[in-house]
Amino acid sequence: MPELVIKGGTVVDRAGERRSDIVVDDGGCIAAIGPDLNAGSVLDAEGCVVTSGLVDLRARLGEPGNEQAETIESATRSAALGGYTAIVAMPDSDPVVDSAAVLRDLQRLAQDALCHVAIAGAITVGCAGEQLAAIAEMASLGVRMISDAGHAIGDARLLRRAMEYAGDRDLTLSLHCEDAALASGGHMHEGAVSSLLGIAGIPAEAEELAVMRAITLGRLTGARVHLQGLSTGGSAGIIRASKTQGLAVTCDVVMPNLVLTDAAVATYDARFKLAPPLRPAAEVALLRAALADGAVDAIASDHTPWEPHLKELPFDEAPVGVVGFETTLALALTELDLPLARILELLSWRPAAIAGLDDTHGGTLSIGRPANLAVIDQATEWVVHGDAFASRSVQSPFEGRRVRGRVRHTLVDGEAVVIDGLAQR
Image (cartoon, rainbow, N blue to C red; front, side, top):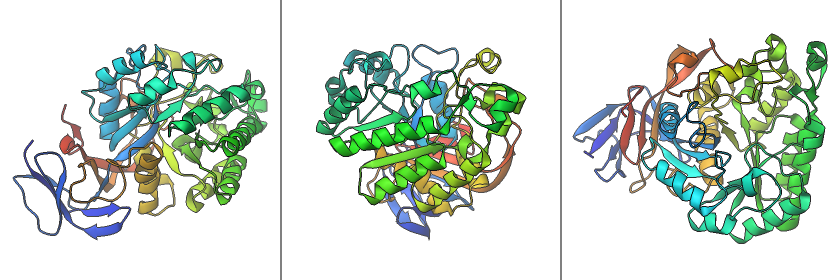
Protein backbone atom coordinates (compact mmCIF):
# COMPACT_ATOMS: atom_id res chain seq x y z
CA MET A 1 0.00 0.00 0.00
CA PRO A 2 1.66 3.27 -1.10
CA GLU A 3 2.04 6.20 1.25
CA LEU A 4 -0.66 8.83 0.69
CA VAL A 5 -1.74 12.23 1.95
CA ILE A 6 -5.25 13.51 2.53
CA LYS A 7 -4.75 17.12 1.56
CA GLY A 8 -6.61 20.38 2.07
CA GLY A 9 -9.28 19.30 4.56
CA THR A 10 -10.41 20.39 8.00
CA VAL A 11 -9.85 17.72 10.64
CA VAL A 12 -12.73 17.33 13.10
CA ASP A 13 -12.40 14.79 15.89
CA ARG A 14 -12.92 14.48 19.62
CA ALA A 15 -10.05 16.91 20.22
CA GLY A 16 -11.61 19.69 18.17
CA GLU A 17 -11.20 21.25 14.73
CA ARG A 18 -8.08 22.33 12.81
CA ARG A 19 -6.89 22.73 9.24
CA SER A 20 -4.47 19.87 8.61
CA ASP A 21 -3.26 17.39 6.05
CA ILE A 22 -2.93 13.74 7.09
CA VAL A 23 -0.21 11.41 5.83
CA VAL A 24 -0.97 7.67 5.91
CA ASP A 25 2.04 5.36 5.82
CA ASP A 26 2.40 2.13 3.87
CA GLY A 27 1.37 0.15 6.95
CA GLY A 28 -2.04 1.82 7.04
CA CYS A 29 -1.43 4.09 10.04
CA ILE A 30 -1.39 7.85 10.46
CA ALA A 31 2.21 9.02 10.00
CA ALA A 32 1.82 12.79 10.25
CA ILE A 33 -0.82 15.47 10.86
CA GLY A 34 -0.16 19.09 10.04
CA PRO A 35 -0.08 21.80 7.34
CA ASP A 36 1.51 21.46 3.91
CA LEU A 37 2.31 17.75 4.03
CA ASN A 38 3.17 15.67 0.98
CA ALA A 39 3.31 12.02 -0.02
CA GLY A 40 3.43 9.88 -3.13
CA SER A 41 -0.33 9.74 -3.60
CA VAL A 42 -2.85 12.52 -2.92
CA LEU A 43 -6.51 12.34 -1.92
CA ASP A 44 -8.13 15.74 -2.41
CA ALA A 45 -10.06 16.91 0.66
CA GLU A 46 -10.35 20.59 -0.26
CA GLY A 47 -13.50 22.03 1.29
CA CYS A 48 -14.17 18.78 3.17
CA VAL A 49 -14.17 17.54 6.73
CA VAL A 50 -11.70 14.77 7.60
CA THR A 51 -12.76 12.71 10.57
CA SER A 52 -12.62 9.28 12.11
CA GLY A 53 -14.76 6.79 10.22
CA LEU A 54 -18.34 6.23 11.27
CA VAL A 55 -19.17 3.23 13.47
CA ASP A 56 -22.55 1.51 13.34
CA LEU A 57 -23.92 -0.28 16.38
CA ARG A 58 -26.54 -2.38 14.65
CA ALA A 59 -26.82 -3.88 11.18
CA ARG A 60 -27.92 -7.06 9.47
CA LEU A 61 -25.72 -8.24 6.65
CA GLY A 62 -27.96 -10.84 5.00
CA GLU A 63 -25.20 -13.42 4.85
CA PRO A 64 -25.50 -16.18 5.91
CA GLY A 65 -29.08 -17.21 5.16
CA ASN A 66 -30.49 -14.23 3.28
CA GLU A 67 -27.93 -13.70 0.52
CA GLN A 68 -30.64 -12.92 -2.03
CA ALA A 69 -31.32 -9.69 -0.10
CA GLU A 70 -27.72 -8.85 0.91
CA THR A 71 -24.22 -10.26 1.23
CA ILE A 72 -21.35 -9.20 3.43
CA GLU A 73 -19.65 -7.82 0.32
CA SER A 74 -22.61 -5.70 -0.80
CA ALA A 75 -23.46 -4.61 2.75
CA THR A 76 -19.95 -3.46 3.60
CA ARG A 77 -19.57 -1.74 0.24
CA SER A 78 -22.75 0.18 1.07
CA ALA A 79 -21.38 0.93 4.54
CA ALA A 80 -18.06 2.22 3.19
CA LEU A 81 -19.89 4.51 0.76
CA GLY A 82 -21.78 5.86 3.75
CA GLY A 83 -18.54 6.63 5.59
CA TYR A 84 -18.56 3.64 7.95
CA THR A 85 -15.24 2.00 8.76
CA ALA A 86 -16.71 -0.43 11.32
CA ILE A 87 -20.12 -2.00 11.80
CA VAL A 88 -21.56 -4.31 14.45
CA ALA A 89 -23.34 -7.24 12.79
CA MET A 90 -26.37 -8.51 14.64
CA PRO A 91 -26.41 -12.26 15.36
CA ASP A 92 -29.89 -13.11 14.02
CA SER A 93 -28.60 -14.56 10.76
CA ASP A 94 -29.39 -18.08 9.59
CA PRO A 95 -27.88 -19.84 11.45
CA VAL A 96 -27.92 -17.59 14.49
CA VAL A 97 -24.50 -16.65 15.88
CA ASP A 98 -24.95 -18.44 19.21
CA SER A 99 -21.86 -20.68 19.28
CA ALA A 100 -18.14 -20.56 18.57
CA ALA A 101 -18.56 -22.67 15.43
CA VAL A 102 -21.03 -20.29 13.78
CA LEU A 103 -19.01 -17.28 14.90
CA ARG A 104 -15.82 -18.65 13.33
CA ASP A 105 -17.63 -19.25 10.04
CA LEU A 106 -18.95 -15.70 9.95
CA GLN A 107 -15.56 -14.26 10.90
CA ARG A 108 -14.06 -16.08 7.91
CA LEU A 109 -16.77 -14.75 5.61
CA ALA A 110 -16.06 -11.20 6.81
CA GLN A 111 -12.29 -11.30 6.27
CA ASP A 112 -12.48 -9.59 2.88
CA ALA A 113 -15.18 -7.06 3.82
CA LEU A 114 -14.75 -3.44 2.76
CA CYS A 115 -14.94 -2.29 6.37
CA HIS A 116 -14.38 -3.87 9.77
CA VAL A 117 -17.17 -6.21 10.86
CA ALA A 118 -17.50 -6.70 14.61
CA ILE A 119 -19.88 -9.58 15.20
CA ALA A 120 -22.26 -9.55 18.15
CA GLY A 121 -22.95 -12.92 19.69
CA ALA A 122 -26.46 -13.99 20.61
CA ILE A 123 -27.55 -13.82 24.24
CA THR A 124 -29.80 -16.85 23.94
CA VAL A 125 -29.78 -19.94 21.73
CA GLY A 126 -31.44 -19.09 18.42
CA CYS A 127 -32.32 -15.64 19.83
CA ALA A 128 -35.34 -17.50 21.22
CA GLY A 129 -35.11 -16.16 24.77
CA GLU A 130 -35.16 -19.56 26.44
CA GLN A 131 -31.57 -20.71 27.10
CA LEU A 132 -28.27 -18.82 27.33
CA ALA A 133 -26.01 -19.15 24.30
CA ALA A 134 -22.33 -20.14 24.44
CA ILE A 135 -21.35 -16.65 25.58
CA ALA A 136 -17.96 -17.55 27.10
CA GLU A 137 -16.85 -19.36 23.93
CA MET A 138 -17.79 -16.40 21.76
CA ALA A 139 -16.12 -13.94 24.11
CA SER A 140 -12.90 -15.95 23.84
CA LEU A 141 -13.04 -15.38 20.05
CA GLY A 142 -13.25 -11.61 20.37
CA VAL A 143 -16.94 -10.86 20.81
CA ARG A 144 -17.39 -7.67 22.83
CA MET A 145 -21.14 -7.21 22.53
CA ILE A 146 -23.99 -9.71 22.90
CA SER A 147 -27.55 -9.21 21.72
CA ASP A 148 -30.70 -11.01 20.68
CA ALA A 149 -31.01 -8.35 17.95
CA GLY A 150 -34.66 -7.39 17.46
CA HIS A 151 -35.92 -10.12 19.77
CA ALA A 152 -36.91 -9.08 23.28
CA ILE A 153 -36.03 -11.41 26.17
CA GLY A 154 -39.26 -11.89 28.08
CA ASP A 155 -37.88 -13.92 31.00
CA ALA A 156 -36.52 -11.43 33.56
CA ARG A 157 -34.65 -14.14 35.47
CA LEU A 158 -32.88 -15.28 32.30
CA LEU A 159 -32.01 -11.69 31.43
CA ARG A 160 -30.57 -11.19 34.91
CA ARG A 161 -28.41 -14.30 34.47
CA ALA A 162 -27.23 -13.01 31.10
CA MET A 163 -26.28 -9.68 32.64
CA GLU A 164 -24.34 -11.37 35.44
CA TYR A 165 -22.56 -13.59 32.93
CA ALA A 166 -21.73 -10.65 30.67
CA GLY A 167 -20.49 -8.54 33.55
CA ASP A 168 -18.00 -11.24 34.53
CA ARG A 169 -16.62 -11.18 30.98
CA ASP A 170 -16.60 -7.40 30.39
CA LEU A 171 -19.25 -7.64 27.67
CA THR A 172 -21.94 -5.13 26.73
CA LEU A 173 -25.53 -6.33 26.35
CA SER A 174 -27.36 -4.66 23.46
CA LEU A 175 -31.08 -5.03 24.12
CA HIS A 176 -34.22 -4.57 22.04
CA CYS A 177 -36.68 -2.91 24.40
CA GLU A 178 -40.24 -4.05 23.90
CA ASP A 179 -42.75 -5.79 26.12
CA ALA A 180 -43.80 -8.62 23.82
CA ALA A 181 -47.25 -9.04 25.37
CA LEU A 182 -48.16 -5.36 24.99
CA ALA A 183 -46.72 -5.22 21.46
CA SER A 184 -48.28 -8.50 20.29
CA GLY A 185 -50.19 -8.15 17.03
CA GLY A 186 -49.18 -4.53 16.52
CA HIS A 187 -47.72 -3.11 13.31
CA MET A 188 -47.35 0.64 13.99
CA HIS A 189 -47.60 3.17 16.80
CA GLU A 190 -50.86 2.90 18.74
CA GLY A 191 -52.64 6.22 18.54
CA ALA A 192 -54.95 8.40 16.50
CA VAL A 193 -53.36 7.45 13.17
CA SER A 194 -53.51 3.70 13.78
CA SER A 195 -57.17 4.02 14.75
CA LEU A 196 -57.93 6.00 11.60
CA LEU A 197 -56.10 3.48 9.39
CA GLY A 198 -57.49 0.41 11.11
CA ILE A 199 -54.01 -1.01 11.81
CA ALA A 200 -53.32 -2.67 15.14
CA GLY A 201 -50.93 -0.55 17.17
CA ILE A 202 -48.00 -0.87 19.56
CA PRO A 203 -48.27 1.50 22.57
CA ALA A 204 -45.31 3.62 23.61
CA GLU A 205 -45.57 1.95 27.01
CA ALA A 206 -44.44 -1.37 25.49
CA GLU A 207 -41.02 0.22 24.96
CA GLU A 208 -40.92 2.25 28.15
CA LEU A 209 -41.72 -0.70 30.42
CA ALA A 210 -38.94 -2.73 28.82
CA VAL A 211 -36.50 0.18 29.20
CA MET A 212 -37.31 0.46 32.92
CA ARG A 213 -36.89 -3.30 33.40
CA ALA A 214 -33.53 -3.36 31.61
CA ILE A 215 -32.21 -0.44 33.64
CA THR A 216 -33.47 -1.93 36.92
CA LEU A 217 -31.75 -5.25 36.19
CA GLY A 218 -28.63 -3.38 35.12
CA ARG A 219 -28.60 -1.60 38.47
CA LEU A 220 -29.02 -4.93 40.25
CA THR A 221 -26.22 -6.72 38.38
CA GLY A 222 -23.85 -3.86 37.55
CA ALA A 223 -23.88 -4.96 33.89
CA ARG A 224 -23.04 -2.62 31.03
CA VAL A 225 -26.32 -2.24 29.14
CA HIS A 226 -26.97 -0.65 25.76
CA LEU A 227 -30.58 -0.05 24.71
CA GLN A 228 -31.37 -0.21 21.01
CA GLY A 229 -33.48 2.11 18.91
CA LEU A 230 -35.37 4.13 21.49
CA SER A 231 -38.33 5.98 20.00
CA THR A 232 -40.26 7.79 22.74
CA GLY A 233 -39.69 10.80 24.91
CA GLY A 234 -40.60 8.70 27.93
CA SER A 235 -37.75 6.27 27.17
CA ALA A 236 -35.32 9.18 26.78
CA GLY A 237 -36.46 10.60 30.10
CA ILE A 238 -35.85 7.29 31.87
CA ILE A 239 -32.35 7.10 30.36
CA ARG A 240 -31.63 10.70 31.33
CA ALA A 241 -32.57 10.04 34.95
CA SER A 242 -30.53 6.81 35.02
CA LYS A 243 -27.41 8.59 33.84
CA THR A 244 -27.67 11.09 36.68
CA GLN A 245 -27.48 8.09 39.02
CA GLY A 246 -24.23 6.95 37.41
CA LEU A 247 -25.60 3.76 35.91
CA ALA A 248 -23.68 2.06 33.08
CA VAL A 249 -26.44 2.49 30.49
CA THR A 250 -26.24 3.84 26.94
CA CYS A 251 -28.77 4.02 24.12
CA ASP A 252 -29.16 4.77 20.42
CA VAL A 253 -31.86 6.00 18.06
CA VAL A 254 -32.35 5.53 14.31
CA MET A 255 -32.86 8.24 11.70
CA PRO A 256 -36.45 7.39 10.70
CA ASN A 257 -37.58 8.03 14.30
CA LEU A 258 -35.84 11.41 14.20
CA VAL A 259 -37.28 12.56 10.87
CA LEU A 260 -40.57 10.78 10.10
CA THR A 261 -43.85 10.41 12.00
CA ASP A 262 -46.57 7.78 12.11
CA ALA A 263 -48.53 9.88 9.62
CA ALA A 264 -46.27 8.41 6.89
CA VAL A 265 -48.00 5.05 7.37
CA ALA A 266 -51.17 6.51 5.81
CA THR A 267 -49.83 5.33 2.43
CA TYR A 268 -49.79 1.71 3.72
CA ASP A 269 -46.28 1.51 2.22
CA ALA A 270 -44.23 -1.10 4.12
CA ARG A 271 -41.10 1.05 3.75
CA PHE A 272 -42.57 2.81 6.78
CA LYS A 273 -43.00 -0.40 8.77
CA LEU A 274 -40.15 -0.25 11.23
CA ALA A 275 -39.09 -1.53 14.63
CA PRO A 276 -39.42 0.56 16.68
CA PRO A 277 -42.44 2.01 14.88
CA LEU A 278 -42.67 5.59 13.72
CA ARG A 279 -44.12 7.78 16.47
CA PRO A 280 -46.11 11.07 16.52
CA ALA A 281 -44.45 14.45 16.02
CA ALA A 282 -44.36 15.20 19.75
CA GLU A 283 -42.21 12.12 20.36
CA VAL A 284 -39.87 13.07 17.50
CA ALA A 285 -39.35 16.48 19.11
CA LEU A 286 -38.54 14.90 22.47
CA LEU A 287 -36.04 12.49 20.88
CA ARG A 288 -34.31 15.37 19.12
CA ALA A 289 -34.04 17.20 22.43
CA ALA A 290 -32.48 14.06 23.94
CA LEU A 291 -29.86 14.07 21.17
CA ALA A 292 -28.95 17.64 22.02
CA ASP A 293 -28.72 17.22 25.80
CA GLY A 294 -26.75 13.96 25.77
CA ALA A 295 -29.42 11.55 26.99
CA VAL A 296 -29.00 9.69 23.68
CA ASP A 297 -25.49 8.39 22.99
CA ALA A 298 -25.52 7.33 19.33
CA ILE A 299 -27.38 7.10 16.05
CA ALA A 300 -27.51 3.61 14.53
CA SER A 301 -28.37 2.70 10.95
CA ASP A 302 -30.32 -0.47 11.87
CA HIS A 303 -29.57 -1.56 8.28
CA THR A 304 -32.07 -4.36 7.58
CA PRO A 305 -32.17 -5.63 3.98
CA TRP A 306 -35.14 -7.47 2.46
CA GLU A 307 -35.97 -8.76 -0.97
CA PRO A 308 -38.20 -6.19 -2.72
CA HIS A 309 -41.24 -8.45 -2.97
CA LEU A 310 -41.37 -8.87 0.81
CA LYS A 311 -41.69 -5.12 1.39
CA GLU A 312 -44.42 -5.03 -1.26
CA LEU A 313 -46.68 -7.30 0.81
CA PRO A 314 -49.70 -5.81 2.60
CA PHE A 315 -48.60 -3.68 5.53
CA ASP A 316 -49.62 -6.15 8.23
CA GLU A 317 -47.82 -9.02 6.45
CA ALA A 318 -44.58 -7.26 5.50
CA PRO A 319 -41.41 -7.57 7.62
CA VAL A 320 -40.04 -4.66 9.63
CA GLY A 321 -36.91 -2.72 8.71
CA VAL A 322 -35.18 -0.93 5.85
CA VAL A 323 -31.63 -0.19 4.75
CA GLY A 324 -29.74 2.83 6.05
CA PHE A 325 -25.97 2.81 5.52
CA GLU A 326 -25.88 5.28 2.63
CA THR A 327 -28.39 7.79 4.00
CA THR A 328 -27.76 8.08 7.74
CA LEU A 329 -24.95 10.65 7.63
CA ALA A 330 -26.62 12.85 5.02
CA LEU A 331 -29.93 12.82 6.89
CA ALA A 332 -28.18 13.76 10.12
CA LEU A 333 -26.44 16.68 8.40
CA THR A 334 -29.64 17.77 6.65
CA GLU A 335 -32.31 17.25 9.28
CA LEU A 336 -30.70 17.64 12.71
CA ASP A 337 -30.08 21.07 14.16
CA LEU A 338 -26.87 20.03 15.87
CA PRO A 339 -23.23 21.15 15.62
CA LEU A 340 -21.12 19.03 13.28
CA ALA A 341 -18.95 17.80 16.14
CA ARG A 342 -22.02 16.50 17.99
CA ILE A 343 -23.27 14.69 14.87
CA LEU A 344 -19.88 13.03 14.44
CA GLU A 345 -19.81 12.12 18.13
CA LEU A 346 -23.19 10.37 17.70
CA LEU A 347 -22.06 8.57 14.54
CA SER A 348 -18.38 7.88 15.21
CA TRP A 349 -16.49 8.14 18.45
CA ARG A 350 -19.35 7.45 20.90
CA PRO A 351 -20.57 4.28 19.14
CA ALA A 352 -16.95 3.17 18.79
CA ALA A 353 -16.58 3.36 22.57
CA ILE A 354 -19.89 1.57 23.21
CA ALA A 355 -18.91 -1.28 20.86
CA GLY A 356 -15.45 -1.60 22.42
CA LEU A 357 -13.75 -0.51 19.19
CA ASP A 358 -12.30 2.82 20.32
CA ASP A 359 -8.75 1.49 20.33
CA THR A 360 -8.85 1.62 16.51
CA HIS A 361 -11.97 3.63 15.59
CA GLY A 362 -13.46 6.96 16.60
CA GLY A 363 -11.74 9.21 19.11
CA THR A 364 -8.84 11.53 18.36
CA LEU A 365 -6.76 11.24 15.20
CA SER A 366 -3.12 10.84 16.18
CA ILE A 367 0.19 9.56 14.84
CA GLY A 368 0.44 5.78 14.91
CA ARG A 369 -3.32 5.24 15.01
CA PRO A 370 -4.87 3.06 12.26
CA ALA A 371 -6.13 5.26 9.43
CA ASN A 372 -9.85 4.55 9.66
CA LEU A 373 -11.08 7.79 8.20
CA ALA A 374 -13.96 9.44 6.37
CA VAL A 375 -13.70 12.56 4.20
CA ILE A 376 -17.06 14.31 4.06
CA ASP A 377 -18.24 16.96 1.62
CA GLN A 378 -20.96 18.77 3.57
CA ALA A 379 -22.08 20.94 0.66
CA THR A 380 -23.01 18.29 -1.92
CA GLU A 381 -26.75 17.90 -2.41
CA TRP A 382 -28.31 14.77 -3.80
CA VAL A 383 -31.61 12.91 -3.98
CA VAL A 384 -32.12 9.52 -2.31
CA HIS A 385 -32.86 6.78 -4.85
CA GLY A 386 -32.70 3.21 -3.57
CA ASP A 387 -31.85 1.78 -6.97
CA ALA A 388 -28.54 3.68 -6.80
CA PHE A 389 -27.48 2.03 -3.52
CA ALA A 390 -24.61 -0.44 -3.42
CA SER A 391 -26.80 -2.56 -1.17
CA ARG A 392 -28.80 -5.30 -2.86
CA SER A 393 -31.82 -4.01 -0.96
CA VAL A 394 -33.35 -0.78 -2.23
CA GLN A 395 -36.13 -0.03 0.26
CA SER A 396 -35.66 3.35 1.94
CA PRO A 397 -38.33 5.39 3.71
CA PHE A 398 -36.51 8.46 2.39
CA GLU A 399 -36.93 7.66 -1.32
CA GLY A 400 -36.98 10.90 -3.33
CA ARG A 401 -35.86 13.13 -0.44
CA ARG A 402 -33.24 15.81 -1.17
CA VAL A 403 -30.38 15.67 1.34
CA ARG A 404 -27.07 17.43 1.89
CA GLY A 405 -23.66 15.92 2.59
CA ARG A 406 -21.86 13.01 1.01
CA VAL A 407 -18.74 10.94 1.66
CA ARG A 408 -15.93 11.69 -0.77
CA HIS A 409 -13.34 9.20 0.50
CA THR A 410 -13.32 6.36 3.05
CA LEU A 411 -10.10 4.75 4.33
CA VAL A 412 -10.06 1.45 6.22
CA ASP A 413 -6.69 0.58 7.77
CA GLY A 414 -5.18 3.08 5.34
CA GLU A 415 -6.73 1.52 2.23
CA ALA A 416 -8.84 3.98 0.24
CA VAL A 417 -11.89 1.77 -0.26
CA VAL A 418 -13.92 4.76 -1.50
CA ILE A 419 -12.37 7.47 -3.68
CA ASP A 420 -14.41 10.40 -5.01
CA GLY A 421 -17.61 8.67 -3.99
CA LEU A 422 -16.84 5.42 -5.82
CA ALA A 423 -16.12 2.07 -4.17
CA GLN A 424 -12.72 0.73 -5.25
CA ARG A 425 -13.61 -2.95 -4.90
